[in-house]
Image (cartoon, rainbow, N blue to C red):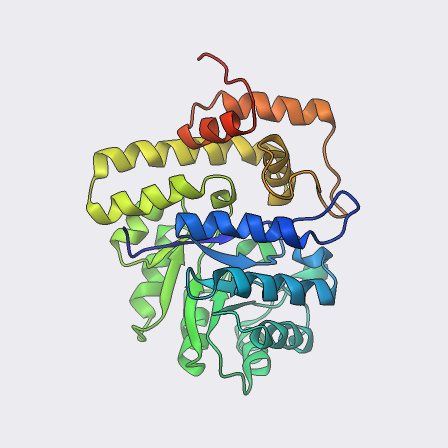
Length: 316
């Protein structure tokens, strides 16, 4: 078994009435324990964290710790905030729930705000003041800007509680510059899937993904093959995951739409509960179109889930 892991920003499960579905969430979490993948709870995107009430965030963290602690990494991914005060409050809530690591995004780029390097560093000074708990930071372009690698390195230098960096939406050049500037060797760096083969070769710790929600076994296999240096077989798995990513991205602007459609199609725990506003579930016709194309990808784990859900697999 690989010592590497994929940290998956997992979905939050709801009932048909729109409430947090705690039983389904426990079952959903068990899938990641079984696959030996770590989890990030209540992410702003795939976890619909912005749509969760304060008490719901607490319960998501508590249930995640109950199900995963000591088995796989169980981390919190509070939604990005505009102010350090709010980010600090969300971070402390996760710390109190005893998650392993709390990811803290930089300030959100609302109304066109993009922090200067000075503002970016001051933000983390304010958020992390007196918090002696493992923290991750994430230069995630989807929040509206990409901090320079030098800014990330300086935040890590100033704050020894930073244990990890989660890279999303950046390429190999960014990773190489970050690694070249980083003086600390105790900070783990989790990398996005598209350039992961190169980034893992260059010292990446593991993967950060959303697609592992639907393909947990496939992501586990990818990392196992990487550590075993079985690159010919790994190339086939890479191709499968890449085709899946390219397909589901047609239903973005963000992850929850395609993710909840897939959960419904495969009758995964919480799949009938759907989305929270401002998202709305696509029409039944759109869900069927999504399902038809998904099944035609020919991915082994997709077909396994389709059979379990009683779906007919098309002959390719």
